[in-house]
Amino acid sequence: MMQRPKNCPPILPCSHLLNRRDLLRLGSLSIAATLVPTEWATAESDQKRDQKLPATAPAGRATADSVIFLWMGGGVTHIDSFDPKPSAPEQIRGTLKAISTVLPGVQFGEPMSRLARIADQLCLVRSFSHDSNDHLLSQAYTLSGRKVTMAQLFAEPNLGSVVSRLQGPRNGLPGYLAVPGITRPGPPPYNLFVGGWLGTGYAPFCLGGIPEQPDFTVGEKSPNPSSYSAEDLQPRDLQLPDELSSGRVNSRLRLHERLDAIRRSLDAPSQSEVQRLQYEGAAKLLTAPAVRAAFDLSVESSETQADYGFTKIGRRCLMARRLVESGARFVMIDYGYDPDYGNLWDNHNAAGQNFPHISEMCLRGYHLAGTDRACAALIGDLKQRGLLERTLVVFLTEFGRTPTINAAGGRDHWGMCGSIFFAGGGVNAGQVIGVSDEQAAWPITTPWGPADIAATVYTALGISLDTRLPDQFGRPHPVIDHGQVISGVF
Image 1 (cartoon, rainbow, N blue to C red):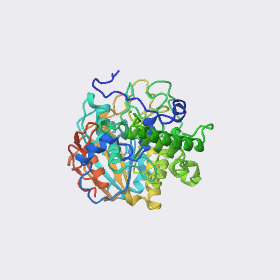
Image 2 (image 1 turned 90 degrees about the vertical axis):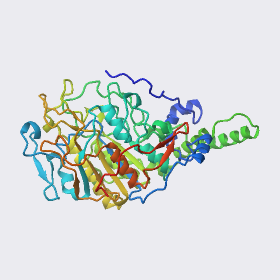
Image 3 (image 1 turned 180 degrees about the vertical axis):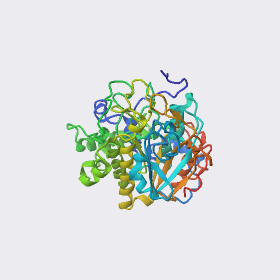
Image 4 (image 1 turned 45 degrees about the vertical axis):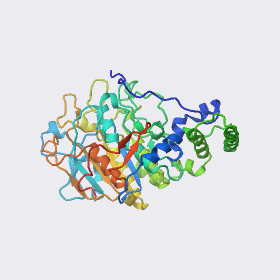
C-alpha cells in the first residue's frame, strides 16, 4: 500500500460563504471559489505582487478559445486502439482485428470503428513516450507537463489550473471544470486534480464533488458490469436546498455587503478582499439560471443523447460539449477509476480485477468501444455546431500498455510508447505523427512527452511559453520548464 508522501502540502481548511449552517448545506468554499473570476480570487497582497511580477508574457496567435481534455487516467492500451500491429504474433497483437480508417494506409484497432471513420479530423501521435511506469508520477507529469518526485505529487498545477489563472472564467463558468473529477489513483486514493503552487483556488470545479468512496479498488465489482449509466452530473454545489431560495441568498448578500461596509468605515478587522469576493461570486452563481442550465443534459434531444451513448463516458462527453457551448474555457472529461468498473484502463488482469482477456475487455461498452463512440460523437457534434474550429480536443492518458500480453491475459504499464490524439482548435488534421517499432514498444521517430503536450495546448490558446506566474509567495515560475510544441500538430 502506498503511503501519503512526506512534505506534501497540507489540506487547507475552507472559509465560510454564508453562515456555518448554510455552508454545510451548500457545499464547501473550496469548490465555490473556483467559480470566482480570476481577478476576484486573488488577494490584495497577491495583486501587489503581480504588479511587480507580470503574470503573462506577450501571447501568440491563438487557434483555440476552449479545450476539452479527454483524460483517461490509468493507461489506455495503444496497441488495441490507435497503433495495431496486425503482423505481430498473437501474444502481442491479441485477437482483435486491425481496421482501415479513412486515411490511406492507416489502421486502428477493431474497437475504434467510429473514430476510424473520422480519422481525417484527427491528428494522431503514435510516439507518445516518457520514462516512468508509475501511475502517480506519470499522471502528475501528464496533468501538469512537469516531472515530479513522490514528494511533489501535489506541488505542480494542472494545465487547466494555469489556463484558469491566466485567462479566467467566462460567461459565469469556472476557468477549469472537471466532469466529474472523481478519479483517484491508488490505493490509497490520491487526488491529483490540484492547483499546486497557484493555490487551491485554481483546482478544478469538479461536478462530482468529493467522492463518497474515493478508493475504487475496494468493494465488490461485477465481472461484467453494465455499460449503461444514469449518472447524475448536475453539480450539487449549485443546487439550492428547498428552504434556501435564491431570494434569501440575494438578501444575505446585500446584508453581508452592508455589514462589510460598516466594518471598513470603523476600520475594524474584516474579511480579506478575496473572501468577500468569493462570497459574492458564489452567491451570484447560485442564483444564475443560465449557469445552472449549462449543466442540464435533459434538454438535449433523444437522438443526440443516443449518438453519444447512454454510458458514463458518453454522458460526460455530452456535458463537456454543453459547457464549451456555454462558454467554458477548459473542461476535463475524467474517465478512469470508477466505482462500478474499478481501475478501468489498468488492465493487468491481476487477482481481484475480474477482467476478461484484454482483447475481450476492449470491446465492452464502457471500455474502448464505448469511448470510441463517445469521442467520435463529441467531435462530430462540435463540428456540426461550428464549435470544433475553436475548440481543441485532446485525448490523453499517462502511458501505454506492454506490447506483450501477460500470462493472465492483461497488459502492464508501459511509459516508453503510447498513442494520443488532437482534434479541432487549429490542428493540422488527417495525419499521423510518429511511428512505433513493429511491436509498438518504442518510438522509432522523435518521441513526444507530457511537457510537449502542455506546450502544444498552451500555444493553441495563445499562451506564450515564456509566460511566468507568481506562486502564493510571489516566486516566479514558468508555465513549462521543458518541452516544445509537437512538430506538425499546427
